[in-house]
Length: 328
Image (tube, rainbow, N blue to C red):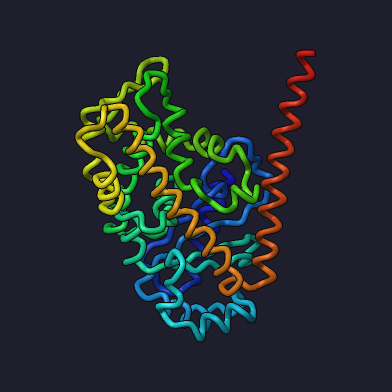
């Protein structure tokens, strides 16, 4: 019931901003994550897709001046479209208070969304769109591109799991969720819950069943929820991965490799490719956030993430310690 109320609130908020191509909400505010309670106040994360990012900010600053502190208002007025599109192509403004809720709004042009979904250029948009989201305003071209993005994420995840008969459906979903955290600066700084991947995978299992298991012929599920991977189909699907990644794979393998060596090489290439993209975009966004959301809000957001991430880490250690004590 609470999620339904939040979704109604999101729709009302989106109605107050200028015309958009597509709007999606993501994160624990709209998609259940195990281990979180409904009583925790969460900032609502939005991806707002527009045709022209400079024009959107011009209109929104006239219409919703309250959203922007001094530094962001100066930045958005003076920055060119090219400048706004640097660093993962998206501009975030956080701590936007509206009708009792707080929003973090990322604005990005449609062309950049399509580029990331299809080519995994930064993996910033692609990684988020692979998980459960609430679509406020839909665009058919973006939805079609995201189907390709999700299929490629499944192919990458199955390859990274390796040649094993001991892979469960939950392990696959956790691997899918983990892709967007490879190389994430927040993980290195312990600014994320160490169990976040598991919580997303478990909380959104119905979504993953619907969007991945039910739409693929790359694997089948046994009664005990272990999966049987069709490796012939999986290796055939490699050619449809994003072109830059596929080219890296072709460059790295040769006909003299054994099957095991080839799989190991492919795993390394995929992992390195995504890690490099995520690491670069996450670091750049951290720096860019000072301009787009303001120094004060940037510090507040960083402190909140650090406190939450480290509290979850401490809770995990405490839980493990208590379990060990019970066996003494």
